[in-house]
View 1 (cartoon, rainbow, N blue to C red):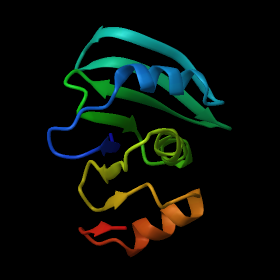
View 2: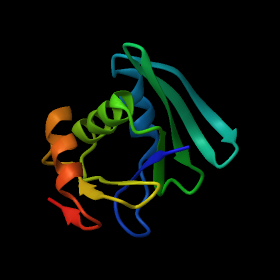
View 3: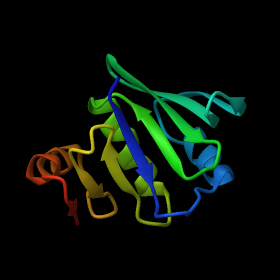
View 4: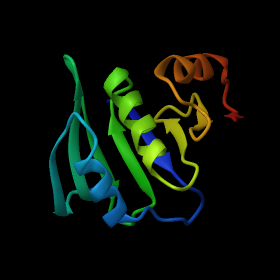
Length: 123
């Protein structure tokens, strides 16, 4: 399964409480759960039309994994960045792109940056 992986920086951790509050206020987010899951401490689902994804915060809070690389996955990544105070870096599980999301404000622009990217950080 393809994954979109979000992180802030090396050894930097996401604020779990901030992510929970944010998730509860993003339209399309459902089933926000906190606890000790397999490799995660926070999970929620996001749907956009017929497309949906699962979002998980890792136990060490250093990464957020988003299942799939469809519109729902990209839209929730952009929504998380929009509501998070630090720039977030996104990579896919194949490491075919690495993008800083804080200046990307639309799904179309994100797709364009992915196409332009070739194993390098794109700002």
